[in-house]
Length: 418
Ligand code: HEM
Image (cartoon, rainbow, N blue to C red; front, side):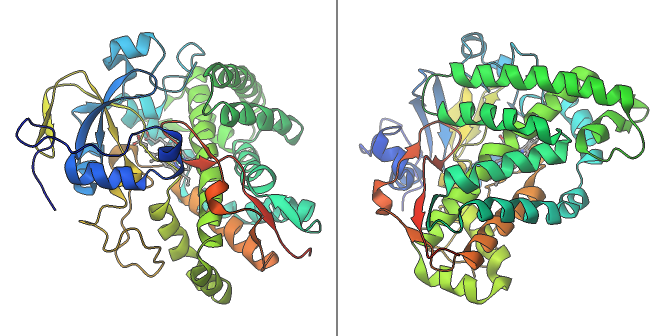
């Protein structure tokens, strides 16, 4: 295996598989293996037309995620920002752009400290019975029919209802969130207009909800939005705008990611009989299996945007100032330098320090909740529908396009009715 600096005239990069084609979206791993080997820090043109660097080796990826010279502020890439080509479509114009994933210290530090007070791992754990009840309710709706689309009927609604509950969105309003979430997912590969519209709806709704809750806040209100309103740090509170941006990013970052953990995870288990049967026989394997599923086919293919604030070097490649840098988590988590036999699903893998939740100061704040949802959803489905199987060959399944997320459009299955 070569560690030569990639892309220099003396070591031209051998032509590899094309990026961002339909074949690539269905299975990007061969292309990532090629990049890791021949061009581990690779400048490419994204489908949006933006030029960006892709970082694909584990050691480089981990280092880049923690490198403070890489800013999260999209205004660093002035042209792309003005054209709305970086970040979540419509978030800047809707006034929810100033959130954790777009901020650097010290603003990031202050806001993260405040949200950490309201969104603790203990709060996620206390949510367990509620996630179990939601999972069982969704399964009740289709378990007697003998067939289902596990994305539409299961993986998609569970996280949206879970996050709405956690935030304290009243039950009668949650159907609206399901609609807006659907606009985001459907438009993942299409025009960005749908996402921007959904972001606008969410922002208007959340701002009103925060305003209402603030006016009527009592000690008995233990939802996360009330916690955000109450959270203070050295006497400092979130403004209503900051609380709205925070609620928005919790929803946005916690929704499609978890859909993909459940969807990708179930597909992997449906195509790995030995591991699925072992898991059914021994529920103790649930936690390590979910961890391995996060590494093997993680929900976030590419971490969110970063921008070089100064000229810097990653993995021996020089990156000029002011350029977008994308850390490809899915490629790093299959790096043979870090994970022996990386293309093998191995729930017993030792030292499984994958990067599916990122690394450094932007490490996923929702990881405890995501693990809980993934474990309950996958464990309960396999327990209640023990003979569940794919309704069509895996290679006929369609994947949603899009730069950041990796997930299926549909996951049709059949099973003996309950
Ligand atoms: C950050 C992955 C679920 C909220 C991140 C990052 C990753 C990630 C990779 C870092 C991005 C970067 O550095 O560019 C995931 C995965 C999930 C998941 C794979 C599901 C399996 C959730 C949930 C929530 C959440 C359920 C909240 C309810 C956040 C927030 C951040 C974040 C607020 C920003 C943290 C910061 O910038 O300080 N997540 N996430 N995530 N995640 Fe998650």
